[in-house]
Image (cartoon, rainbow, N blue to C red; front, side):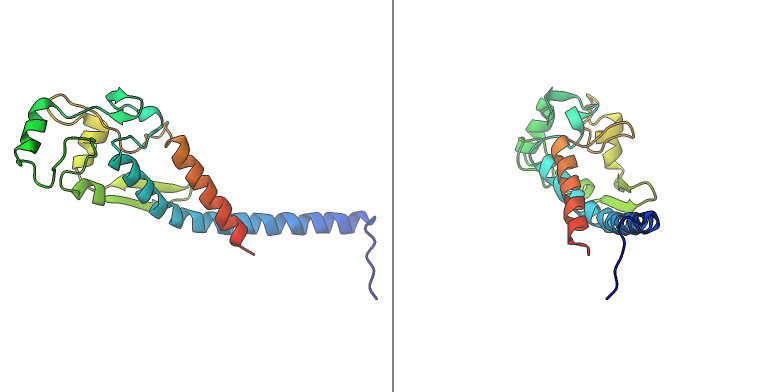
Length: 171
C-alpha cells in the first residue's frame, strides 16, 4: 500500500501546480471552442436584436435613437416608398429592422483572433448604418460595437453562459 504524506511541502506544491496546470489547460481549451461557437451565437443574437428594432450595442452606442436602444423610425418619404412597394423585400415600416433585402444582415462574418473574436459585415451598406449615417438625414443605427463599446448586457450574459457551459462539459 502506498501512502502519501500530505504534510510534505513538496507534495503539496506539486499537487497545487498539477491542479493549476489542469485548470489552465481546460480554460484555454474552452476558450478556443468558445471563440468558434460564440461567432455563431452572436450572429443569432444580433439578428434577434435587429428583428425587434433594437441596437445590439450597449445603450444603443452612437445610434440616433428614438428611445433607449430602439432605432429611430424611418423617414416619412422612406415609409411612403415602402408602402408603395418601391423598396424590394421591405413590406413593413415597423420595427426598423434593417432588413430591406437581407443582404447586409447576411453578410455578418466572424473569425477567431488572438485576443478574442473579430466581427464585421462584408456588405458596404453596413458602414452607412453603423458609421456614416443612412439616408438624407444621416441616421446612425449602430449594429456592431466600436472598440471602446460593448454589446448589451443580455448578449454579454449569453456569451458568458456559453463559455461556462463549454468549460463545464470538458473533462
